[in-house]
Picture: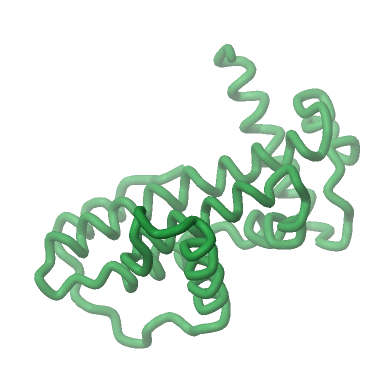
Length: 171
């Protein structure tokens, strides 16, 4: 992929998200967004690219949250992963809505299952040696809890390293 290709994909994804934000009822179709029609062969390829964008943002925040939680004697991995997911969702509501509304499509269904397993493992709710079906079950329950529960009303004081990392853009 050349730099030109990279920027075309980035601009196409931005155009798709803008289009979906303006018209939430519109179907996800690269043909409806000229910039996307020239970059993505079909909706499946677009969905995978959208998930990749989501996953980059989420995993970066999860990694930072886990590092901060492990460095703090009072740190809580479940809270760190929950906050990372909620913050990523809050910062990318249109992207999350698209992924959720297409969750059953084969193009990303496996990617979303992997995301749930990753969150369960990162939060310490499951162990890598457990059967994949069990990790899936735990990840699914954790994701449902994340979607339905409100964030904690009182936030703990963040470490200076965590505060510094919040200043670094994740996009």
